[in-house]
Image (cartoon, rainbow, N blue to C red):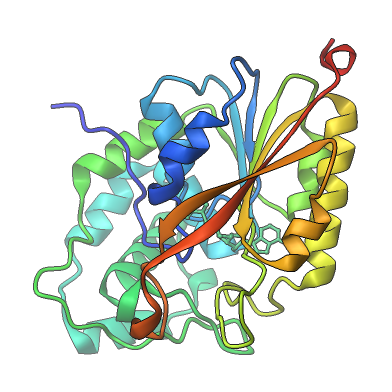
Length: 281
Ligand SMILES: C[S@@+](CC[C@H](N)C(=O)[O-])C[C@H]1O[C@@H](n2cnc3c(N)ncnc32)[C@H](O)[C@@H]1O
């Protein structure tokens, strides 16, 4: 049986829920697909399943995440063999967590990342000031970290996909007229306590949001389609107000939030651009 690829990790801000809204904003045609904040890749896998991706470049700042994508693309069998030997056990979790990913082979790094993600507390990705993963063991009934069919399906979807460890601006060096870029940045915080920016030491502040907007302007001038999702904040509305951008609202259930009382439906923004016809040629 052929499995359809799905995200192989849980990731804060995963886009499974917004997928239907995002699809409404897809241009009628586009060439290459770029996703510079790939995370768990929910929208990429959705587009792949819908047969809309023919050529793609995926990137992210998170080295362990990108290593995992590369290992699954290039050596799924070895990732599966590795995971198959891992027990769901607290002592094993902490031993594996303590290992330096740089001392492991690429498939071992990928297996470690998937295992820690699926058995760690709440599917969080959090590192300390030294960049070491520090999420505690999570208690689950039967965590499915060994999903052989999906790893093979994901590997198939990633064949001939360019996967890079890079800051989002690198998209400027790669996107051509008629391409589509989907940006799903760490969200602009809706409150002082919102913790959506902590994927990586350093976070993603207002200055980064501004640089991202400038990047969108540059791509628009070049004739590149963009779709961007972000939180519903005054900063985001201001950055993208008026031409060439159009802003619409969508509803999402935020599943990963340390404050369980604040889970629920919230408004998020989807921003697209209007490209002058002449810039597409
Ligand atoms: C909201 S998440 C993306 C979620 C993704 N769409 C999904 O479905 O899981 C944001 C991602 O941006 C990455 N990131 C943070 N700062 C970055 C930067 N300056 N350049 C590139 N990626 C960055 C994080 O590692 C994280 O994976």
